[in-house]
Image (cartoon, rainbow, N blue to C red; front, side, top):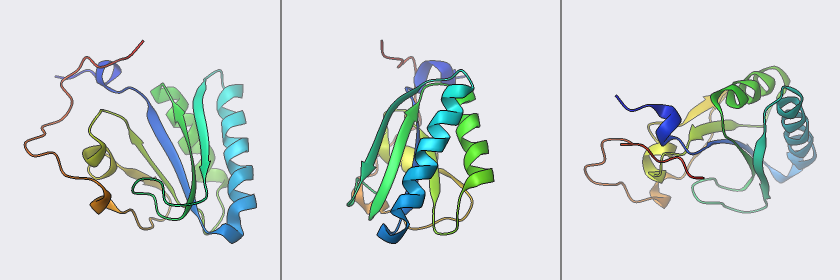
Length: 135
């Protein structure tokens, strides 16, 4: 069995939104990051995109967390505090972008569009083999 602590680099938490909801989306990103940090966990990176970013169409934000605990804090905060019109996919980063965004993608609340044609499927990919943790 593959130990996820060895093969998952980070977890990506996203928010898709229309430009008229940008202020609400950015406020939610800041509040979620603050909640995670106040829970004793770290947020590694955060970004806001005004245009398509990979398979994420339109405007979006994302941040990365390193532990399942931090991911749990993010999911619970978004589940309790999101607004209509904000969509929250999240996934682990195993090194296979297509599989991470298709078979391993999960959502908090309602789903919206994700452009999986952005990626090429990896023929024969059977999942992470580990270890992959970077220093």
